[in-house]
Length: 236
Image 1 (spheres, rainbow, N blue to C red):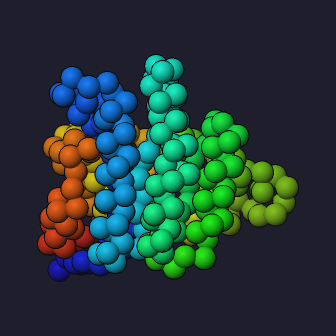
Image 2: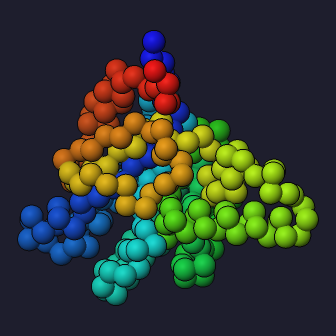
């Protein structure tokens, strides 16, 4: 008999479609990114209300640095704005903020803002809102392998000590459970270098909705769909 597990602790979302949303309305791409950032608050509040313990959002990938400079500058400007103001509203709802990714690629003022936000919300006991910024799954895995290699070389552990749990503990998400559900908006059906290790057994849901049009109601519908799925984890 297959194992059915309806508990849902961790949702991960690839927020895709901001640019296409703007283009459909003959607006600059920046307008789509701004509207998409506003949706983050609504979805985070809904997930928190539903009792989700972890929500991880793919905000900016390591590959996104290759976009046109003016678009990258716009995205970084929006990030500065929302780190200063909008996330403070989420803090009032007892939500804890954390950020994963290659911080060395971000400007120093943004890194400082991130550190302050994480520190200010560290004692919050509600949902953890994890933002993947300047994040790449392959970078994360390579960095974990380097950490392990350094420890083995130093003599702090042996090759036989390396197992799945130890490797997971070397990742950015070391103290978080793996996602139960991965959602991607905009109709695209790929993972795009997001949480490659962690989504090994996640249920995947691809929505045709562009991220700026994604609503709390649609999130609720996807959660209900998740509850009806059978999760076998490789078993019969």
